[in-house]
Length: 237
Image (cartoon, rainbow, N blue to C red; front, side, top):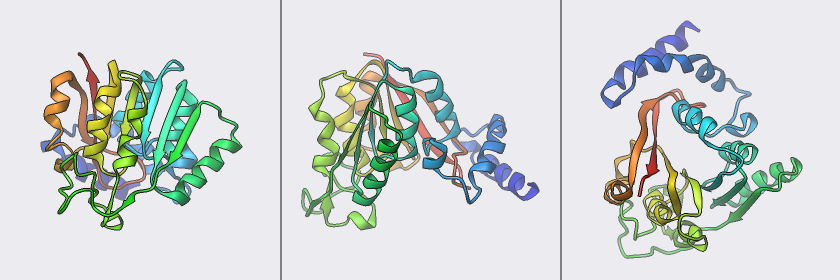
C-alpha cells in the first residue's frame, strides 16, 4: 500500500497546476481497489471517468433522467440502474455485442443501444481532429474512416430532450457539437479526458454561449494509475 500511496501523492503533486487538490485522497482506497486484476468498469458497473465526476452523477441522475452516451461500457450499466431512459451509440462491433448480452441477461428494458460503424474514407481532405465538421478521430485504428453517422445519431431526438450527454467515444469534438442543442436547460454535458486540448479548441466557444462549467479537476479515475480530467457543464440558457 505504501507504494500506491507514493504514486497517488506523486500525481496529486504534479497535478496541482491543473486544479488537483489534497482532498482527492478521499478516493485513494477506491482508486487502489480499481487497480486490482479482478476489477473492471463493466464488472463494477461504474463509469470510467474521474471519481469526482462519478460522485456528481450518483447524486444528479434520477429515475426521471434521460441520458445519451457516446461510447458504452460501465457507464451504460451505471446509467440504466439510475436513469429512466438511456441511449447508447457504440462504434466497436464486438464490444457492442458483449454489452448488449450483459444488458439482456440483466433484463433491463430502459436501454436502447445502436452499433454505428465508422464510414470508409475521410469526410474531408486532410481532416483536422479538432474540427467538429471533419468527423475524424485521432485513434490510429480510425485512420481513413469518419464518424458522421455515429456523431449525428443524437440528431434523431428533439432539441432539449436529454438531461445528460456523456461524450466518451470517438470524434469527440463532433459529438460535442451535435450534443449541445439536445441538452435541456438545467441538463449536463460530460466530457471525459477534457485535458486533451483539441477536444475543446473549436467547441469551447459553443459551450460557453449557453453552458457553465460545474466540475473540472484533474484527479484520480478508476482503472488508471495516472490522473485524468473529466469536465461537466450545465446548460443555463
